[in-house]
Image 1 (tube, rainbow, N blue to C red):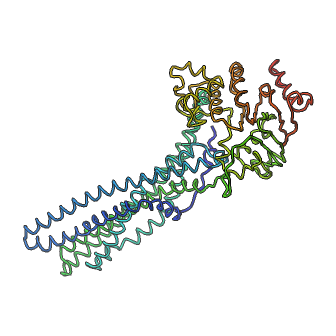
Image 2: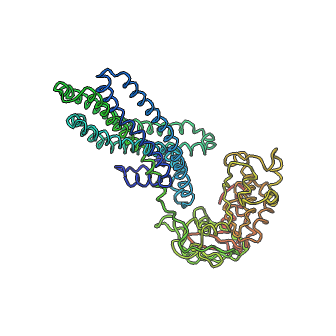
Image 3: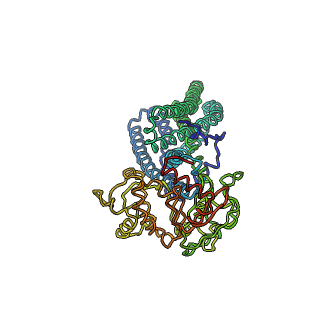
Length: 597
């Protein structure tokens, strides 16, 4: 199976966009009270940590040097109590920030999901479902540690670094400069490594997205895979994608893991320099033993936060790509959306007009060219023609899944581009060849047409379209679980349930796009009466390649070369002996002789 389709979004950004970081942390604003509480607890903990080395200096120079065991015990007791207090503060702040982080992730995930639902068909046409799932699940999860550590680690570590430097300078500025001698080396390493690391993690996340997209599509089509004995081919493709994912991970880790060894090297060298210079100062009597011991504590208090910050920065580089991918989706504006001046579409009769409509999915390849027609409320219109001439495009424009590039599409005289999408589509019903059923019961799937419908109304809709009988044969009846995508039901049964769902919605305009294509001949005869009841009193557009099913339509429109080449009843078009006659006779001969013409 070719895998290029799963690589089409692999566009890299060279460096971290700090606007993304600011935008990401703006989600903390609604949680400022909790963040402030966390910061207060951290301030208490940091204060105790900063005093610990000073307590050591005091204990060595004052109590140990003078043999004051009682004073040393008192000092040790004070240190124990204070440090146990910091443990409580640390536990409480982690619980508090974990709650804040999870609330933020819920907000982002819901915002992303809601936004994706509003995007136009063109968005879904160009992306495998697996890639979209990777944004909602994997990329959002990647932000978990980033939010938590930004408050619980980054802020206190920065404060500790600044405080440690100030204290070291006040204690002995010469030793302080010795301790910081390797800092320029550390900064240089971070500058050079960060860019390569960011790009590496971008590649890794995209490779993971490619793998998710392929896996989702492969398992969704597992029946096709097994039917054509293509397991080895798909396994080979999956192995290629997994190999790319593994290589990308190893490459990204090589750069990321260079941070902490650099910090440890700087820390070790800096400590060695401090103790070497400290021995010189001790011999001259410039400093005391307690001061040197305390100073070593402050060195650790400087370099440990530097290491933690480098790890956080490493984490930022690793996970910020997830934020970039999330905001990339959130920044996509729906091509089809309510305008600022959109009005509610009032209850409609079902009159439909096309006025000089032009449309193409690509600007240079028109599908419809200057199409005009009028349909009266309650009429059943059949759209026929060769594959790819624009039959489905016509009904997509009525539903406003796409917008005409020029011309007008009117319903009861209202331009569909000037009314809200909800008020338009809530008065329409659409059934396609592959009727999608959700996981759940038969009753839930029928009720999806009108969520407040009663059980009696659900069952009545099923009876009208001849679905009640087969539903009753299941052990649990309407409470039978259909499994994912209705896998437990036959194609014809899924269509009948979809008919009941459409009938329950009671739309004024009904669109049937090859809705009977997957129903066998016996089932089709059974459902014809139900379809007639479904169409009665509604404006209906029926797309069907099986021309025998649309002979009773009020009008048949033959679409050819971007326009309507013929229009009339079945009898009228048969008398014309045009394209419709050719299509009908070809099907008639094929059904009776098995030969195409």
